[in-house]
Structures are given as structure tokens and as C-alpha cells.
Amino acid sequence: MRYPNARAPDSSIKLSAVGNPLAMHACSSGNHEGRLCPDGRDHHLDSANVRIGDMRLGIAHHFGWAVAVTASTDSRVIDRRRIELIEPGLPAAPIHHEGGPHLLHRSGEPLDDDELAALVARVQSSVERTASAALDELGSALPEPITTMALRAWPSDFPEDIAAQRRVPYESRADSVMYCRVLATLARSRGWEVHTYDAKTVEDAAARHLGDRADEVLRGPRSTLGPPWSKDHRMALAATIVAS
Image (cartoon, rainbow, N blue to C red; front, side):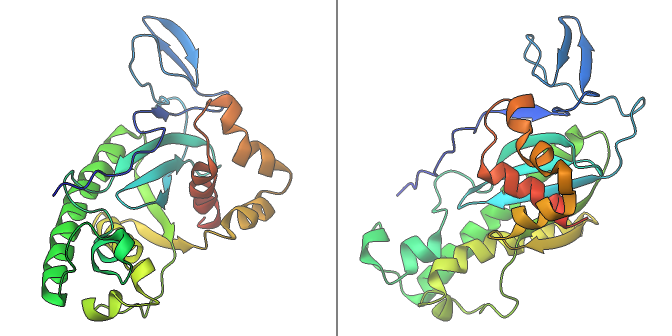
């Protein structure tokens, strides 16, 4: 059985080095401030002329995909994109959708612990491959190296055992924790610092840090970049600020 992964409205949109007066790019089509050029190419800040500091990556993940926002040291958006976290044909939430107690979520007969563990292992391997490729693609598109990644926080004592994960109260969070753990491992393998944030409070925490600049930094990209600039984008950007 194939499992169609959910798609977000911004699945095909990537904009980089945008939303600030320095993001003026020259190409054969002319100058375009903070927008994709008419020739369809994506232009980045010329790091030879503008020093923007190390890159800080914020991730707002979902089952199978994530919003990734990369910011400079002064909280300017350098890149925003959707990244895929799993290959097609696999369940994006194997514990919750295939192994949990809710019959409504299952696509077939219930799996025993060993079968579910094998499915989770296949999904995790897919996430490792897919997320690694997405992070490599992102890193190669940036003018400076990524130094930090911010992820949603997860309990440090979350159980590893599948038999425990598939039961309440863990089953609703087990898949999310898996994505976080994989992303954290991939980040550390690249030499990036890993920070975590509380999704409920991170935007307020960033606003306090920014003071009078809060609205411009967190909500301004919607007008300077254009849509999409959603709650996920604000949260991911806020996470890079709180992690600084």
C-alpha cells in the first residue's frame, strides 16, 4: 500500500537572500529586490560584498516534511523553503497511523510489535536519507556555512521501545520525536550546534529579544518576500533568534 504524504501549499517555492535592502541582485533580466528573477533562477546575496555572518537554521517539522528558514546573525531571512523528510510510498507517521490504538488511523490490519518495529526502521532509514539530501542541498545554496539548527523540543526520557511508544500517552508524539532525533543526529554529524525550542512560546520569546524590531523581523517578510509566510515560517525564524 502506498501512503500519500501530505503536501503544504508552499511545496514548490524557494526564495533566498530576501526581505532586506541588501538583497538586490543583478542578472541578465535586470535587478530584482527580494524576488525570483523572471528567468526562473534563484539568486543569493553576494557574500563577497556583504558579510552576513554564520547561518542559523530553524526547522518547523510535520509528518514527512518541514518548513526550513535560514537567517543571518542579525535575523535577516536568507532562505526559506519546504524540505521533504521521507520518500514516497511510506507512512509519514508509522506509530500514530499504523501502530496506535485508534482504529480510524489504520490503513489495514493491526501490526504486532515486531512488524511495527520493522516498519518504523524502514521509515527512519528513509527519513535519514531524505533529510540528509535536503540539508545538503540547502547548505550548498547558502553564502555562508550553517552553524546551528533549532528544532522543536522533545522529552529527553522519551521511551525507545516500540511497545511503549505505540501506547498512550506516547503514540501521538512518537513519530514527531523520531523526526527530531534524526534531524538532530544529522545536524551534529555536520558539526552544527543543536538547539531546541518550545513551539508554544518561541515567537513570544523572540519578540522579547528583538524589542522594537519584533514586528518588522517576524512579520515583515510577508510583505517583503510575499506569501507564503505562515506561522511555521515565523516559528522557524523565531527559533533561530532564541537560539542565538
